Length: 386
Ligand SMILES: *Cc1c(COP(=O)(O)O)cnc(C)c1O
Image (cartoon, rainbow, N blue to C red):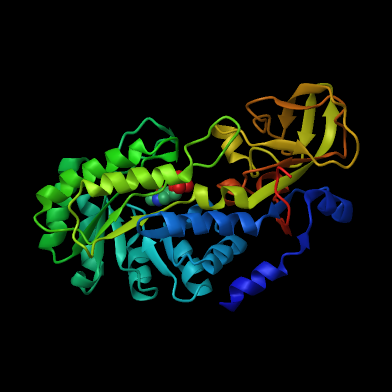
């Protein structure tokens, strides 16, 4: 639809980050959007995943990401708040939203059901099921998706200590949901940045245990997100391997023909879609002060993952590299990268440094703290590695 095209076209396009800095001379951080990267990975999911692909909106809710994914053919969206539901529904015609947060306000359930036609709701506790059944009018129209906890240590971030039911609890939840007149599905999330496909096989084994005891077949099985990006200190398998593992796991389940298989990738779909150009505002011995940091777009660096780094080549840099402490722009001493970064030894004030793989959770988690907020987006045509 047209909004997709128009927003995308409204981003000014440059050949490369070099061209961006030569034109803008930006003292502020600039997101370099690479729509071709998003299109390519979306295609890979749509062609390779044995089921429907839901984009997990929280990973990057920027309009250009939503529009590009939509234009690439993604029509299903994993949303976790009323704001995300309305963002998608108001922007993208006939997009379908699923409410995948196991804890929802009554207001959010009511509005998403009434105004936005949401018909899939995740639960991991009986109180949430009660809440939903008090609010929705027509139960056999609604799918209760029971979220299982899975403790898989092959993922960088675990997502099952806060949410998820045990197999026994899930069986009880499914039976209660059926008893109330709902249809049901089963979901899990192996954890984010999952490094191999086995987690999905294990998750599907848990799903199997639940549906064998449920007394009725599920209408959907949702294998969640967790598909990895390629960081310098963390790479998963090639994407096809995950799809293979999921196919293998699904074969062992006896699902009815009309049971839908869903996945909810966030990171994998948008990680390569944005890089960030930052500028050095001060060099102090072995320390470099940048215009973006821990309160900005570097949440992954703050936790565990290392982003690829390169100098934007505006001049000749020394071949000699050195480890630098990197500070962000705010007045807080905690605004420091937890690792040192290797840069040319002659890096100086005014140089620009590009960080790749910031598309996942980077823009989404940035704050306004201390008055710093990266809000410039441009499209670039080249690849980070070119
Ligand atoms: C965050 C989240 C996702 C996306 O996870 P990724 O690891 O980014 O793929 C999917 N589903 C749910 C329920 C989530 O909370």
